[in-house]
Amino acid sequence: MRVLLIEDDRMIGEGLSHGLAAEGYSVDWVRDGPTAETALRVGGHALVLLDLGLPGADGLQVLRSARTAGNDTSVLIITARDGLDSRVAGLDLGADDYLVKPFEMRELLARMRAILRRRAGRASARLVAAETELDTESHVLSHAGTVAVLSAREYALMHALMERPGRILSRAQIEERIYGWGEEVESNAVDALILTVRRKVGKGVILNVRGAGWMVPKP
Image (cartoon, rainbow, N blue to C red; front, side):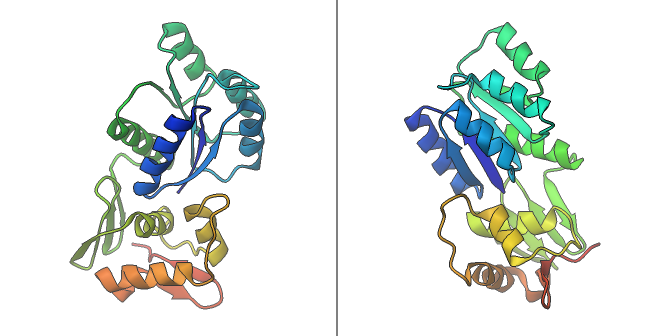
């Protein structure tokens, strides 16, 4: 799952990028307002983490521009501005949540999961399809009675496939969802991930549709 991180502080940005990558998120990081506006126009992200104190254009301005243009990508504001007026302004402009720095990584991840659940119309932290279940908190995958803990990249793959069971994802679509800008992706990277997941819980967890891609079976 791709996340757009808009944060000008190098130390915070590096820490968040590493922490999110460890949880299976693919992070595209930009550090100023104008670049953020361009990234939002390009799109392709499931969630945006938006700092407000940005060079070139304030974060609230970036948010206003995105919503005015019809961009409905979920936005979680992360900022040191703790005043009531700032919180109200951010939420009224269309942010889905507002988190004041400093914060614990666990809380950020929990708020991200909550936003994504609401976006998908789910109340549970589990994605379920037929005999397959994925816990989005623990990254535990179960299939037909076999249980395994997934690596970050394996989890990203299964999350992408289980968002909509029965939908076929091509190689390019999977790569777009689990790899970020500038990441070198080997030609057999997706095949290797699928093979590893199948070895952990069983071949039937991911079905191949010849000439089209892969899917998780519908219930």
